[in-house]
Image (cartoon, rainbow, N blue to C red):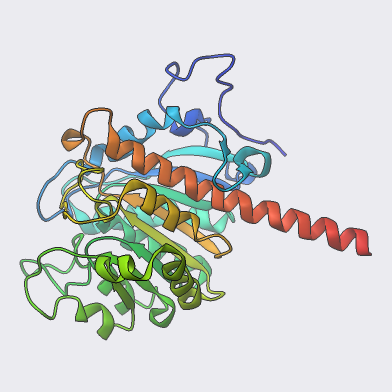
Length: 327
């Protein structure tokens, strides 16, 4: 088997070469991949700012800062995973439903190959075709959503498809297991007092930022793991989950949010969950701060997702060795 890993930064410096994620090879060899990084450069589903179509490019560029060993999770990613940068799925600028069809078709191939996609958005509307592709292969999924908005409106300006209606549509289409799904981090001004009740009426559990702060990270993670159980899970991370002091480059920032460290601790707490796919969305490079801090946070979340997958595979390998020895 061919094993794909980043270029050796002791042989060529990290600022050199084509801007793939973590300097991974840009190939489409799903047969020899465990996970893929794939861009979904679509932003016509946004309701306020535009520009997330440049998110995958920005995330890839700054990801060259990342190294292969994750000390927080205690795992060397590429000792256990073969990973490629799969490039971008096709989109049609300005046409959301056509783009969703193409995104879903492109990602379905990845899932059918038994490979886990980590999608770089793109506005949050891309999560709907991601879930369509995943559910077509795996069946309905649990959802873990880190976000400051629930994205369960019924419509916006009378239209059913945009980045604020994603998870209502996903629930209506039977892509999710509501009783195993949880939305974490909601905060900010609302259109009405019943806005957050829409999620609960769909069967999701919802924790506001204030509730997470009161519970603390360990208990929040216990709630997430209890909710998800053994279900195949899709993890969706909107960077506006984090306070705009740390992620200014996003479409609908909400003050009073989490620090970068708190966000990473929550993602690391997903260890042991059966992840079928994940995304990092709503990165707008033109609004980013000095040092590309939003893109760097997004790249690091993707790095943590890869680390979770590597840790799961490492555990499976150890269990397999233990079984072999006992036999």
